[in-house]
Length: 142
View 1: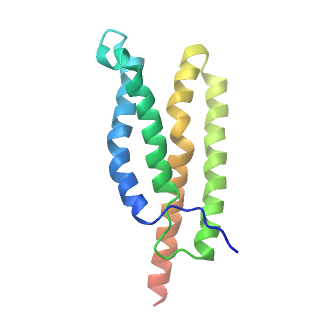
View 2 (view 1 turned 90 degrees about the vertical axis):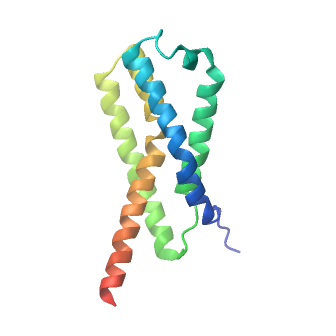
């Protein structure tokens, strides 16, 4: 019996649509904390629940996008998923190693918060680029 732990195909569309506002809110948190100072956009700091909700919601929606079943799911897709995940982990950790050498104290912690989602985002980009290339090659062969 082969178990497949992927989400249904509709989760990809829902995840993309829902992740956009949460991604923008996360970027707003990062910009506000890094550049504007504590006094600007004070409502974001007054509501720690909003930051927590943003992290959870962005994680869930990115996982929905990353691990939704493709319409043409087969062994090739599974292989591309595995190799894309390995590449995304490697790139993400190289970025973390470079940041550990270049950033210190609070700047490094801020970077780690921003980098929290890089592995999923890199995986989504790499996987979709590779699948698009495979589908384009398949169309050209016909």
